[in-house]
Amino acid sequence: MTKFLTIGLPSKIIAVGLNYTDHAKELNMKLPKEPLIFMKPSTSVIRHLEKIVYPKGVKRLDYEAELAIVIKKEAHNITVEKAAEHILGYTCLNDVTARDLQKKDSQWTRSKSFDTFCPVGPHVAVGIDSANLKIELFLNKELKQSSNTKNLIFGPKYLVSFISKICTLLSGDIIATGTPSGVGPMKIGDEVEVMIEGIGSLKNSVTGERT
Image (cartoon, rainbow, N blue to C red):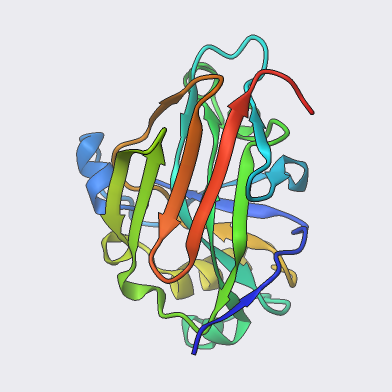
């Protein structure tokens, strides 16, 4: 039976790039041989219904719907077989990205790290099987992304094990598992909604000012 818990503030968010087969096909890129990871700061986190701020100077702001893993207890150098013991549950996440800066920079930190660039929520779903969940994103109620977690290249257990061998994962930390095909731009005034089967709906709107 699925339970729903409140999301705390993570010490870090580890995100995974190019982790859906349909997204790799969309970009005409080969499937990665190991996860491509990057980090978002805890200061980028906002909650359900809070505002995404479109930073001044950014020319293109993109949405990226993602299934996110929430860590239950400290994980350091664990095996795939032990990974489930360290997963509390799952939530929705929008990996907001300044796409023009991502293309400009040699790495992704600046484009992914602005305040408000990591909406998560609306809660943690505990006891859910993440292997076959519909994931969708709506921009102003228009469907833009639609896929299934069965299209993940590297699944949650593998990701938890892989990342734990690089940095210790702490209780409440979040792993964003990657986005499917269909990413695109948002503008000020837009409403963006990430929906994942069995988890719920994460809604945020885009503003030009920090409130």
